[in-house]
Length: 123
Image (cartoon, rainbow, N blue to C red; front, top):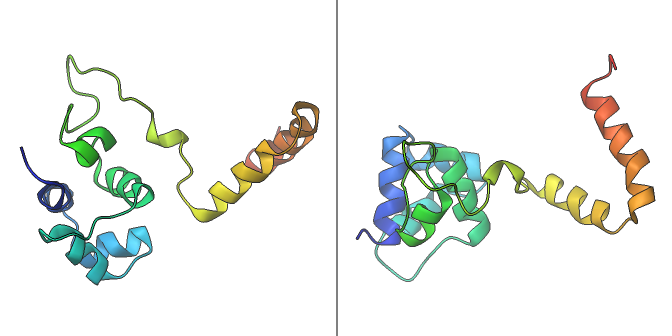
């Protein structure tokens, strides 16, 4: 089984991304990606692992553990433990989600309506 540094490097290369391009997408320096790909004690955070999986199109479970299907959507695969499309993908999304969850259910409805109006103004 490939170790985490090898899995990160493999999925980055298979996605056609340089270390610099992946770093740019993650909002980190190229040296961080280089360190993650070396067999040392430097590992990305769970948040960065999730973003690497999104950027490279691999399963989070495979990237993080080496288990499960490498690519989501193949024939006969089990569904992923969670869908990364529904995980905050930026600091702004995370802040919005945290604030939204602090509202009671009735207070969430007008906020949701406002956001949906911004996304779909013709409605």
